[in-house]
Image 1 (spheres, one colour):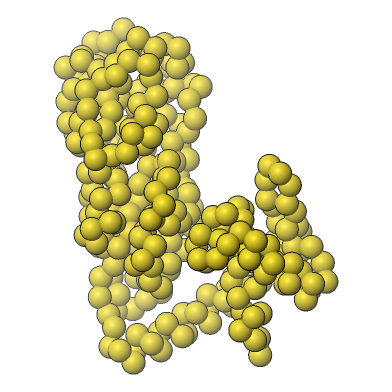
Image 2 (image 1 turned 30 degrees about the vertical axis):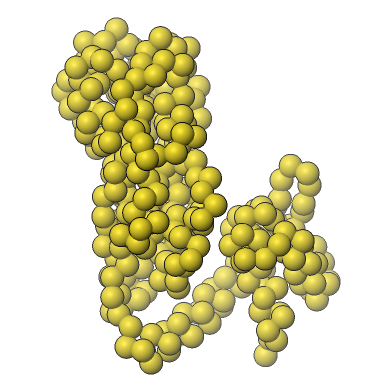
Length: 290
């Protein structure tokens, strides 16, 4: 039987394997970065070999670390699920996990909901659309338990869970715009094009990431509002390929962008309201396939 110290070491290793970052691992475990290093070294001494390669630029699992992760994760999840299930049964806990999403609930998110509900009988996940211009507000005020939002996420009161759905960007322009006939464009082609951005209360760094061009376009609250501005020819809007496909309209053309970083989504939740169902949903997203 593992001791409390050993369980903490294993938990630390599992979180580090997800984050591949000592600082973020410490944040999720509510311990210092040095404590994360201490727990990892203790586990490596117990096993007798290195589990993690660490350099100034990156963190990666060793082959033994990969093997341990593959064998440990199912056992750890089963243990946690058994304890949480017993606790829930004792308290008669059932209910709904509310998950916010921006723009489009893609196939991976729908699959994660199905996996979550399959593994937790008596508990349902409800998807709730949140405003494009307020990616973090619903998590903060408790309207949702977790949210799937566009990166970046730099909020100290929120936990950033698994990152997924990295997709090429397109630029939405009016069907009458000169760029509409192009097979693809580069960032330089957008230098003189006003790009739609999110209105407040979205943080400034997040707004800048969604509209990285030098010419500021109109600020909008929803994607539909942004696409309407695009259709009138007043601005362009950056969207990932799946969102562009979902929001197809005849008066808007979606042109792939060759040299901008891919868009990506992440699951986030509030540090003070982290629960086992939230963690279980995050795991379901992490284990899904795009």
